[in-house]
Every structure is written in structure tokens, then in C-alpha cells.
Length: 491
Figure (cartoon, rainbow, N blue to C red):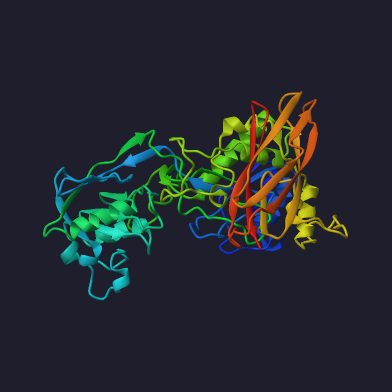
């Protein structure tokens, strides 16, 4: 990766979008993407990287370096609707992009666990793993398989191998309402966890369960959207918990993507189809959205640093869905900054952010000095007294293991109107006191900088130790709302 990034730098690129991550947390001086990205930022190249697809487990994210824009994944307001109609007349929502269709009638419906071979382990009975289904039992039936082990398209392939006429993929509880629309090799649809349980209940309630999968159609303006993908890797960062990651979220569920004709849409050996486009999900899809938005901002503001562009995106991101409610996770529970960073990206807002939190290549080297890393640039010598990692001029604030009082300094640059006055509003994390001084900052011209302090301390003794709580602070001038997330845990 380091060589590839250095080659891109020599090619003169303006933005790098890197949909690759590390499997395990990797220190900055051993992370090729982090080192290469630092080389890029030295030349003022914006670098956006995927947070990873290891959610919903906490502390799973990749690419936590503060010179990288780390991107989570969320949904869009579009569905590829393919409902399941049960024999009792109940219709349950589902999604798919398979081109295969059933004749308009009811078919026998079974749960995978009812049609398995005798040697399949009980705890894997509903998973439709390769070779697990009995052709004599599954032939001609629609088979309900559950997520958990194996690939989604692999489960559909197993149903087809066993002679099944159709396939329903049921989400696990962890997947919630996040539905991946796959190009299966037979008529199929995916349903959320609640609907999967409803189908299973129906199967167990009647002697001859039946179902029909309706052909897929595109539905726009669906609600709620966005919500966070369950697979999107989450903070806090284990490498540098003083930096709040991910930075932001962008569309990453069921995204139309160009596809190599050298590979089938499912990448299965038995799939001989050739397509130019595919529907894909992952932070590999959300990351290019931020890369593209960064390129747009760079075109509008060619003199801005990579840090200023990140700041513009982060401080202008949205926190609500299209129902006006806070962004939720895939199960409908409130999401938090360790899932979405500052929120869902809004490129038009980012083009005119009002204020930016800027940082230089030297600032990042000083950050590394505070992290005990002193050898990534041989021309730079760390000062005797290294700064705290939390002192980096970042557009968010993370304080792990707060003990007593902590004060951070931030500096904002006016990129809006010449004369302007900004007032601060604070929504502190529960049980935490946050005071910003001064609470009003004045600018007489564009490009002017102003610094302020953020003093954080525990307000009550009821705050649970080592559990993160979240808040926000926002600078506003009547036109711009420059919002930054706060994450605090108490020692």
C-alpha cells in the first residue's frame, strides 16, 4: 500500500480514496496506509479511507490516523423492494436485485433447518452452508435461511444446488433492518430480523406453509434514512483514543458501483453472468462519496489544506434522518459519534462551512511525537516536551478516562464573510461539564484565526466509569452552524 500511495503522489493526484483497511489495530509506524497518507498530506493531498466492515462491535475501526478522513457507512432513501407474501395473506417487506422471478402463485415454504442433511451441526442448521441442504427435501420449495455463518450469496447458491425454487435471507438480530440487496442466482429476497422471525413463526404454525416472492422494483424516498449500517466499524480507536473516529458517515448500503467484467456479480464459481455494474454495500462504497465530495470542495477552494477540507465536511454533517429524528442504528436504536463521527455528510453545506479547524504536516508530526513515534520523518526532531495527543487542532474532541479537569485548545479560521461574530452553544455529555472561553469570537476579515479553550470536568459522581458519553459544541453566526462532537469517558 505504501508503494501504491507514493506512486499516486508522484502522479500528482489531488484526492486519494482508499477503500482498504487493516484486519487488526496497527500502530501508525507499522501501518502502510497511515505512513503513505502522511506522505500525501505533506503534499496537501486529501486522503479518505474506509472505517471497515467489522461492526457493530466497538473499537473495530481501521485507518484511525488524524490526517485521514475515516468514513463510516449509512443508508440511502431508496429500496429495491421485493416483498414476501405468506400463505396466510401477510405481506412482509424485503429487498433484492436478483433478475430471476417466480410465477405468480404460492410455493411450498420451509425453514432451512427442516431440510438439512443429517450430518449438519444443530447450531448451523439454519445457515444454508455449502452441502448442508438435502435435495430430496428442498426441491421445489422456497427456503428461509438465516444470516450468521457463510456468505449471503453462498446461501442462495446452496438453495439452488439443492433444487430450491426460491430463497429468503433472514437477518440476524445484529443486522437489524440493514438489508443487502444481492444479485442472487435464483428468485430471492432479504428480510429484516423481525420479519424473519415472523416467517419462521408462520412456518411453525401450519402444516403446509406457502409463500411467494414478488418481483423487485425500485422505491424512492423511503423512510427513515439515513440509518447506520450494522457492519460499519466503530470507535473508539484503540490506537489513538484521543482522536474521535470515525470522522463522518456517507452512503454505503446498496450502492450502484462499476464492476469488472472479469468477475461475476456474486464472484461465485458457478455464476457465469457478466455485468458492468453491481449493487454493493460496505465502507468501501461510502469512502468514495467522501473522496468525491473532497474533490468538489478542493475545486471550489483550491488553496484549502486537506485539514480544512476535512473540517468543512465534519462540522457541516447532519445528525437527523428524513423523518426529522436523530440518526439511528440498523435496529432503530439511537446511533452515536462512534458510529457516525460528526454525522451524515452534506456536501453543499461543506462548501461554505464558515469556520475551519486547520492543521499542518508539522502538527501531525508533533501529534506523533506525543504518541512516542519519532522516526516517520528523519528531517524532523521532536521537541523535548511533547504535546498531548489531544492538543491537535481537530474538529472534534475525545477525552478517554477523564480524571479531574481537562482543558483543550482549538483554533478556528474564518473562511466565511469578512466581518462576523460567532456565538457558542454547548450540549454537554450527560454528567459532564463543558465550558468554552471565550463564548463569543469576533472576526474582522476572512482568513483571520481565533483560539478558544474547552474545559471539561465531571459534574456528578453518577457517571459510569469507562463508559463513553457524548455531547456537542457549535459555533454559529446566524448563517453557519459549525458543530463538533464530544466523546468523554471517566476514569
